[in-house]
Image 1 (cartoon, rainbow, N blue to C red):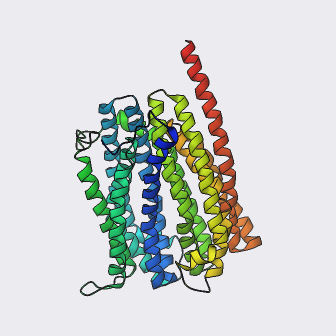
Image 2: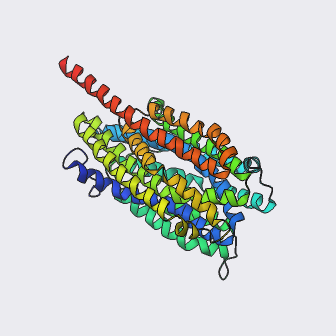
Image 3: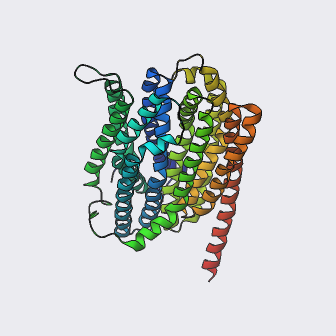
Length: 453
């Protein structure tokens, strides 16, 4: 296919960046869906932002289930393609999508049926916030299957060395969301103003458009032509997908659950504090979504070269990605630390809330470099199919955010929570790369022993 990049030969920097740039752009586009919602909802008021932010936590939680299918599927497809086995790659793609559909249906039903109980977790004392949060959660859940499938298909296409198609499809989806958001939120002509509910409907329609574009592409791609989606699942392959995907999936779920608990602590400071956290995290996500996109590129690069038994090239690919992650981290740190006011004001133009938003961005800004290195290194681990170790470390230090936050909040108030996030991110950003160096040495020794035998 003309959009695919040869990851097994040629200049490493060129191959990696050609694959990574559209992925990073796609990640930013996916982030822009939420940011677009926040920008328009921010015009409704901070209460509406708090409602969307609370409901959005459960969309964030769904990322863990998506990761289970996407991570395992992407790695196994990449390794199969590296060893020139297209039938095996197609089989893994099929089973990843089958698992995705099952999880999407179960998750959607759970969100709709128990929407009241989930929103009650945050203990809001504002009836309007509670109602808006439930509305957003229910309406988004009806279209969750599109979001699940879009992200898994994105990973599978990326594993082939094609990152341009996901970028184009998601760009069109973003444009649709930008147009539909103000239309459904504020109304125009025969379209009534639906507020928070309108933002949810706009997002679902945009995701459905992206899926239609993906479906059109899949009918002509050799990985999907003989997919046979409705054939019986192969549990041996699902087991392999699960083995690779479960550690990062568990990490993602734990990260979200802990973030939800932290949000509950934040909520004790009022709706304004919740709005600051939701908007601040959206702004901060510019760096971690970009790094995550680059990690996906590195995942495919390492997986294909590992499948082709070209370990030296895989190692050099990580070294290149590591340097780029440092540059990315320095840039985002500088932006958040030195320009927090103008950036936050774009989302919530309320002067009483602005100082809280500035504090958030500055404190979280100090951790950006370490967070980018952590995420990119995780992509390299995944490419080798070794997802357990970095996931365990991330779960441990993410869990420690709770006691650290509860301690610091007594000393610093609301800012103590933000410092807990920053401190644990810095520690993770030091430990994960160190462990990857040890993994590389272990794999190299194993290769030498195999050659000797």
